[in-house]
Amino acid sequence: MTPIGEFSTIKEAYTALKIDMTTLYKRLKDEKYEDYYYSDGNISKPKKINKNPAKGAGNAASRAVMTPIGKFSTLREAHTALGISRPTLVSRLRDSEKRDYYYI
Image 1 (cartoon, rainbow, N blue to C red):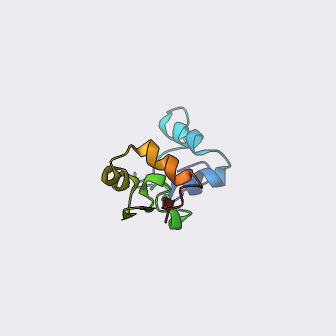
Image 2 (image 1 turned 60 degrees about the vertical axis):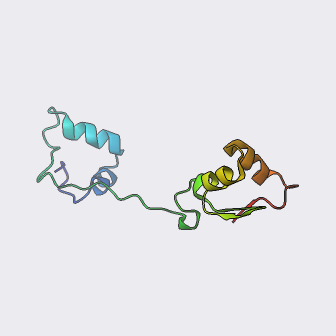
């Protein structure tokens, strides 16, 4: 509950109040702000949305790679199979002269 009404999510509340999320949380916890409180304790946080699902979680280590000995779904699988370190594999993937190493 806020001075301007009740909201179903934290995001709706701080957007309507034109304050940031941290400020709203502080006001909800601070007793001096009597108008700010959880009415039923079931206010949900906004869900995180993957804005670029084509890149998975956005973690380069989770990307598939092609190497001279085949395709691998992660960097860890590839560098372990090749018997080289992760930084060496990444260096080879970035090197334009190493055409047999690339991200898929």
